[in-house]
Length: 353
Image (cartoon, rainbow, N blue to C red; front, top):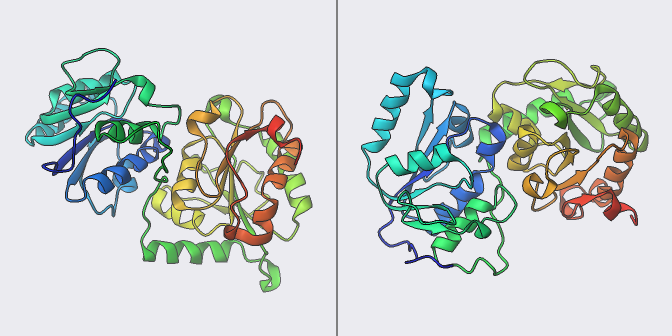
């Protein structure tokens, strides 16, 4: 199945991306699409429909992003504010509207309401909501790559050809980088002014069944620190404001995701359970190891560069730490110059290491 008429760059100046979701991870997973749109339509402005306030912070400083429309969360409880926002968006007739979701009925309904010359999304059946409906087989598995595959399909790019995917990004500016580095340096300084040879960040929280217990993390950290006693450890404190590592190491807390990203950017390695902060580490550019025990690795794993995901199952923390140490051995020796973390792996893949 091919696009009826490829959407080309000529005449595409106003783009709307319709992704009404309030979660940090899902918003960050949208950033490769925005990068791809900026590359395909260099002279265009991009508006984004999101939900809640998080997208304002994620897309602050993006050159081609003009407006981020953040619908109120649970809009049915705020009908007047919701309708005002919808009517405001409808004032503009867009050249291209992109619905990047595979299964969101809400995003599809909004796409149908908004005014656009071309409307692009996934659908296996003809629909009046879209002018260009890509078969769902085009989407692929990874959440960040699906929207990129969508616009490449619509642009006539061969989706079967091997392609590099844009990384997750948050575009910190120089001042943010400098302030984050200053905070990190102060937090990871050893007594008597001795600096650790390697800075490792740990985020011990996640939602529901994705969360590892405090006891599991204690087991993990004992093995990690036993192997690298001179490393500087920094715990990234969750939104609830309480340590998950028993206050054993210095912690950094911020309710501002850009400040948190700035601190993460200075780390040499970031280890975290599968969660939105995992994607924030990837977007900040720190080599990130994501630990998965229930969610699909191939859908959410950190990709590109020095990032990787690992399926942990029911293995104890000490065993997982040993596998992580094996995977990051070259990175520990050479820092960011190594590209040795590879792609997503489970324990069976690591047995020979």
